[in-house]
Amino acid sequence: MPLIIILVECGLELIPKKIRNHSAVRKNISSNIYSSQLLDNALHHSAMKDLENLKKRGRPDIAHLCLLNALGSPLNKTGNLSLFVHTIHNKIFRFNPEIRIARNFNRFKGLMAKLLIDGNINSDGIELISEVEGDLQNLIGSFNNPEIILFSSKGKLIYDYKNLFLEDLSKNVVAIIGAFQKSTFSQKLLKLSTNLISISKYSLDAWIVTNKIITYYELSHKIQ
Image (tube, rainbow, N blue to C red; front, side):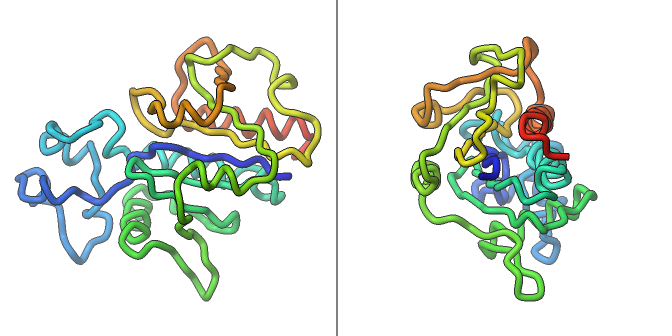
C-alpha cells in the first residue's frame, strides 16, 4: 500500500471577513485576483494580531514547500503516495498524484484560493484536487487497519529509519505532519494516536520532515 501523508492544520484560508477592512488587507485584495484573497502573514501581519490561533494561520508557504517536496518525489511518481491536506478550519483535500503544483508562490496562492472558493480543482475533466467530506477521524477510519504516526519534535526519537516503517507494504501507514509555524498539535489531533515520533534532535521545518519521511519510506521499500 502507498504511504499516506496528511499535512495537518495548514495555514490555508481565505482572508476572514473581520479583517477585510483593515488597511493592510485593502491595499492588496482584489475580487479579480485569486491570490490576493488568501490570508498571508507576510502581507497581513498587522491585521492578524487579534485572530485566534494566530501561530498556525496565514502561512500558505509552508504547505507550498511540503507539497513540492511530496509531489516531486520518486515515491509519488511511482504511485506509492496518497497525499492529503487538512486546513486550520478542518477542511480536507485529496491531491491527485498527477497534479503539477506551481513553483511560483503567487500562482500557488491563487490555486489555493480558488480551491477554497470552489471546493475542487479540475482540468480537462480530471479532478486534480478534491474536497473530502468529514473530519480527520472519518478519513483515517476509511483506511483499512491504519498504522498512525504523528511526527513531532516532542515524540520518541528514532535514529534508524529502518525501525520507522514496517516492511509489509500491505499495511496502511498514515504519517501525520504538522504544517504550521511555531505551535504544537491540537489536543484533538493528539487523540488520533499515541504513536508520537521524532526524527531529529532538532526541531525541523515541516517541509524537511516531509522530505525525510518520504526518503525513509523510499529507502525502506527500495523505491527509486
